[in-house]
Length: 541
Image (cartoon, rainbow, N blue to C red; front, side, top):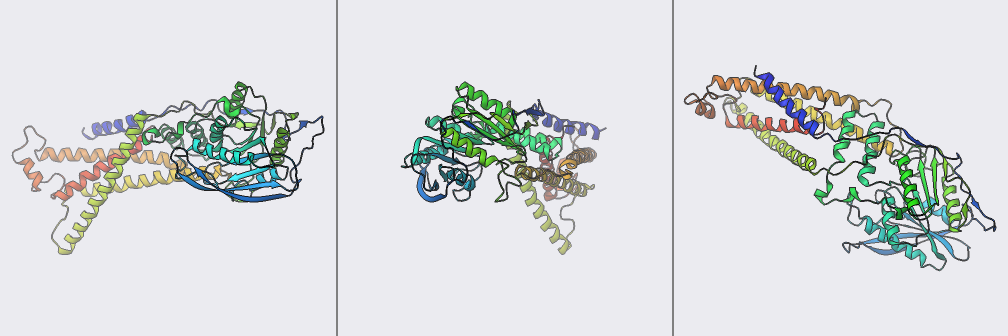
């Protein structure tokens, strides 16, 4: 009569929290495709005047280093920056230029873009690869406008060279830097053309939310783990001073110049179909009809074959030749005769979550809950260590019970605590395996044949959590029963009952203050863990 109502109240609270923190997410339409007009990725131009179009490998290449102080405009912070300039040997006259822009991470001039920069220089381009401008920022606090200013400084550096045509300097941007390039094209209206490798297109919140949701599904994670993505990407990061997730770079000016867009069929990071549609739409709004799309089979996010984390992996198929041919013909001002959309058909598994937005209420609640849970876990650990020391000392001195738990509450507390902590460890292990699987396929690896822990752990945790709630209901019902027998919860209480309980003469929980404190602190801690599980959706059945 007592346990069932307590269980209903507790489970009802947890189910309510799980459903209240659930974020709507529409994956439709799924399985979108965009058919190319030709399987051939090659790029050709109408060349009635017989203008010489250099090919990859036509010239020897020399390289030299330049150093400069990259200043962050917003703070004045300085980053000593290395630039490697590559030039074709023995070529006279004014040459086109290309500046390379880094994707995510901390790329340097030495370990980035070396092969592609060399290939373009071997076809008559002066290229510049610089250290990625990061200053003291990290992946979630990048300064895109500041980075754009530094890249523009290098563009002006190329334009100032005697052998460079200052009207024909373009950019080669990959992944994250395709957000930066939007700012750059607003700053510098004289950039001649751009190569966009796996462009992110949408806001970071939408693009990375798409990436995570798609990849969680690809690795075979349980739907429960996939629902975690929805909560994470509704966090209001502006509450912590981070506004990067909602920067809006999808605008006509970002695609107002001749553009080559390239995707790989194994790229699991970008929304290719909706990305192309958005790019073409923005370009047409800007009055630009010179946009070429290329899809390459078996290529990953950086258009290479194999695992992206490995060095020395080659580019896919004819990608390097196609980029060189497109850049050479475009720099010459020729009209493209090959199909605008070529290569393999583009595919997108789910829709971009364009309705994602910051949820301040969810963020505040989640932050307070997790801070409280961590605080209580630390406090419980400290009290448990103290209790252990006291118990060991009592055993050595044979002074009797150290904690004085009565009615079996001590054993019940230990069992429930171990079970809850083990469940928390299982949750962490399952989520960790999902993240490792996502990282693997993001770098170009294959998803696991059998999901294993990342799938079965979620329903197991749900069952265990429900059992734990029932067990806690039994404990609380037993507490009420014992307190009733002691006359504590009568009205009015039995004379002297409260004093007997507090002094330990006639205990409900334990005869010592330390035992009672340990029980209630641990109980509140375990409740906070269950609330944390509820926050992440484990009580959505």
